[in-house]
Image (cartoon, rainbow, N blue to C red):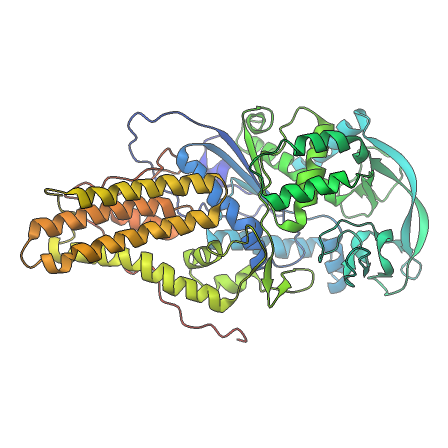
Length: 583
């Protein structure tokens, strides 16, 4: 289980290598650490391998869990962060039909792109896989059988849209029309991107086939249905006991359940997917991708455990009631993770329900909600080509849409990098390291006769580290970054007050003490910033002679030993020029 190659391996569409951890740090010595180890499952939304992910996805679902997981690893908790590319269902087949390609080609292209995105940004998974693995198929089929055996699945004849010209039944995303709730004219047969409601194709006003543009007709077909209605009271009781959840998540979920839950189709007329483990419906039936993809949170830990050579290791995160599980998603996925997935877990039995579902709200571009299906919002790759990794991580994190929809422009991102990251943190580190080089030949001086002001700064940094940790633990990630940067500003204020560039002329001891205290403070702020800026804070700490471990506990301010020879650091960040958005 500790083999690093097992942790890094990504069992995916074509056994592509998984993304690196993004700046792994070897261990420091730890004196008598207090054991507070928890099992933390960090479950990240599975992107459809049908198109590029945009900045809204990064801000909503993919960067937040990496920050959260890095913090918990630094605490010494046993984190398992999993996700993968969703390679089944209609988004892939729709794209394949549009391009005249096989679904496998679409999956291969976008899965590779996702893996590159994570690598470029240092988003570290213990396993990033796909829903196309044998493990996922087996686990999903076993889940189906458990629900069937427990009496939560039943067969029923139903009507489904059929395209006479195409000669085929139309899965949900092959039908588009007007949302009956908000009037959005581009609603899909499974969900309205505008109001977030889940739909059935028959709910749509003026439905049209995406294949031919014709109005489809209803025909009889048989499917398995899931007794979602049986979980209305248990779900409502469970939801009303949730504490610490974001109000928009909890209120939406409770409102949805109070409105009444209805049984939902569990299978679809679609070849591209996981086949049923029973044959009583005949050919051409697969498990509905909505439910199958959710089961990836259950199958990925099992795949990770098998790859690690300890097949039962996953149970510590799923069956131990003291383990915690956090599901990082965008707002449009709240129904699936706060209602449907807990209901599925209840139906299976014996598995942990979500500890929290910290959904972010939407990122908007020009007032419109980012949407991959409607082409609103540039791809993650567009940004990684123009921003340094930690610069992009910073600019996105400081704009996380945690409590409300947030407009993000390229101009705003560049401004944040230049006026905050470069001017506050980068400038602080570079000038203290440079002065240590200039006045002490890059050897950390001793602190001689440190006074109350020096002690106050160190106490302030220690308090900053505690507060940042508390905020990240509460998944208030934007506030955590703001607090860390406020700590950096405090160190800058201390330097401006002490003026070591002046005292160097006639008071070597005072200058040395000032720089030693500043270096200790910088080390503490670097730890606080590490979950957000793993690449550059690793460089800073190594330049100060500090090596952190891949796993903690090391969430504390490192002491920089006097006499340490600082290594060459160089500028942390480059000031950005304006970006031509029409480029």
